Structures are given as structure tokens and as C-alpha cells.
Image (tube, rainbow, N blue to C red):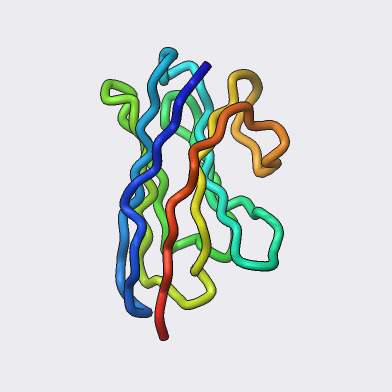
Length: 124
């Protein structure tokens, strides 16, 4: 069992930045692929970014590429999502998730454990 707790969400003006954190507990963090997903009101959950177990490989949705950066600190069992140049369309609840087996994926159905989510609101 893995417990995930997101933090760092909030209200920001368009063009601003936020840094989300995802603290994990319960198992060896470096055994898991990490992913960030988001869900806006009335929309399906969508992939944002993912990172391999070592942190050496990262993947991004086209909508955030060049603005968001995913990273992880395995010694601290924490993953991060640095979000720059935020846009109103980035407004959503952001979730972190871990996958026990396999490689980093954009498919939310392949992730095994999820955090409770943190709200990000970007005003225009």
C-alpha cells in the first residue's frame, strides 16, 4: 500500500507559477513510476506528465510541454510538478499517482495508487 499526499495548489494569475509536491509513504518510492494527472469540472481526467523510476525519463502532454517540469527526489520520497506560464485552461484538480510495474504511461488506468488531489485555479 502506498499513501500519496499532494500539496502546493492554489489560486494564481495567468502567467504565474506553482510548484506541486507529492509526498509518498508506505513503500520504497524509487520502485514506482510517478505520474501527474488533472481533471477539470465536467471533463475526464487527463494525463499531464510522468517520470521513470530513476527520474531519467520524462513525458509530457502536448498542452503542457515547455511549461511544466516533472521531477522526483527518491531520497525524500517526493515528486514535483513545476508549472510555469500558467493559463486559465490549466485550472483543474491535480492528482499524483504511482505505478508499481511497467514503464511510465499516459494511461491513468495503469496507475495503482492515487492521492486526494490539489486544486489549481488560474485566473485570467
